Length: 620
Ligand SMILES: Nc1ncnc2c1ncn2[C@@H]1O[C@H](COP(=O)(O)OP(=O)(O)OP(=O)(O)O)[C@@H](O)[C@H]1O
Image (cartoon, rainbow, N blue to C red; front, side):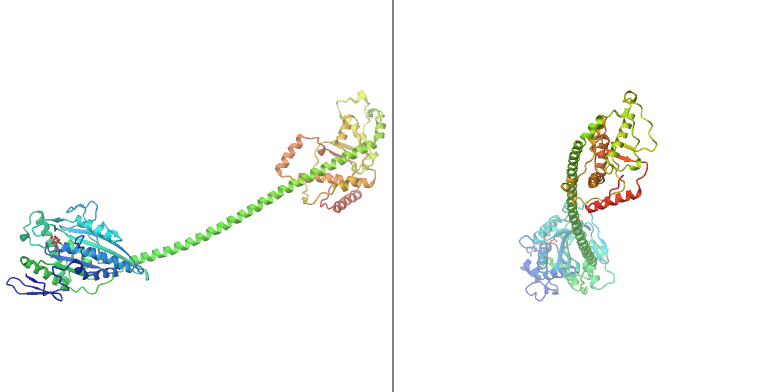
């Protein structure tokens, strides 16, 4: 055997070539052919922690074709390789840190085949096809990205395995003399880890590159032709470019030719300096492959000699700013939510107040309706009572004056008689205050006027024409016009104050003119005014009753709503002649002496106040 694995201790590897000098290589670790996947991964695991800490990490598999690069990186379902195990370690550490950090992991899988980048996670991706070309773009200083590359978000290992298998199945492979399923491309897994420190809000964005390089091979030895030859040439070219970059970095050359190949261009961020790099070099223990083994070990030795300097944490300042903005927006939204909640509570409070006021208004309206109806009933009862008393009094008066009436009936017709001189107008008083004689004379004269005015009755037929009336004569008018309501608004009576008890007034109620009886008498050709009042007390009672009646009528008009007044007016027009609308006015041309009038009004006011009526009736 050309390689002495038995003596490999502390990373030293001794190569004995046939007849050549013995060469010793120094590495970090040397694994013999019996080392399984788990032992190999033990040296890889710390890099998983570095990725989660925010460092860029690159793990390469380099070596001659058919030496086990793909087996080391991908492995099989039973012996899973570095790719799967590293991701498994990531999720294990993430679970440990879940109370302190929040991580998000995405996985992209691509290959560089014949100097072209191909996305292996595209659904329409076919092995070896180049349906979609991807280019490398520099998005920031030292940061390169492949726009349009699928980034599969994974949250558990079953998803990771699914993604890894999808990429592996889409990879371009071919059969060569050295390997029945030789990888004809560089397969690259890019694991993007975005972390956030939940304590200080620090955000990191780091990359883990898992690279299974295509196998270096001697074209002549593998005897490839056609497409395989072209693939081999491209593979060797890119591996050569990788060697040049490693040499430039090792010698600290001012120029590092990263852009000489797609592979080095893509890995520029990880090879350039700030990242941690691990290279796994596979060699063949076969003596026939010693020269390729020596090439691989020399390449590995150069890589090991590169001093990249201390790795840097990849802070995601932009993401930190974004997070801060999001946090601020959340705070703002929270404040606005609180404000909206406060306003909603205020609106609810106002609505409840409005509802309460509506209830109060409704109750008040009902109360007003109730009081109005109560008032109407009271008025009706009072009016009925007064009417009955009037009728009763009139009946008594009728009986009392039966005798004078009989005497009148025996008198000659009015037309044949010489009319008495008209009453002195100055002596006319409101009928409640007039004497019986005066009132009778007035109505006699009025009756005569009525008869003369009636065109149906020819005065020449029955009576001689009456003598011309003196200029200063009294006038009695009987009309059915509605009594005018004073325009001066009168204070509304508190309906809760009861009307004066009718029982107390009844015994002293004065006899009033019953309008219907007057009308009947007029129709019969006789207008008889019953004797109303002869005694002062009766006069006073009559005034009270008239005042009550007038006030009742007046108030009835005042408290009506405009609509009711309108309706009432319509009814009045259609019902002229009703008993309530009959107005008897007795006026004279001469004024009532002022002293008499004032004393009369004063007496009336005093009487009203004594009765608790807050109203002064002004005689019209
Ligand atoms: N350590 C190992 N244990 C068991 N089998 C191995 C080991 N290493 C490689 N093999 C087997 O050797 C064969 C070739 O290995 P692999 O395909 O990984 O080589 P490679 O370096 O990737 O070749 P290529 O560069 O052509 O792709 C595979 O069938 C693989 O199963």
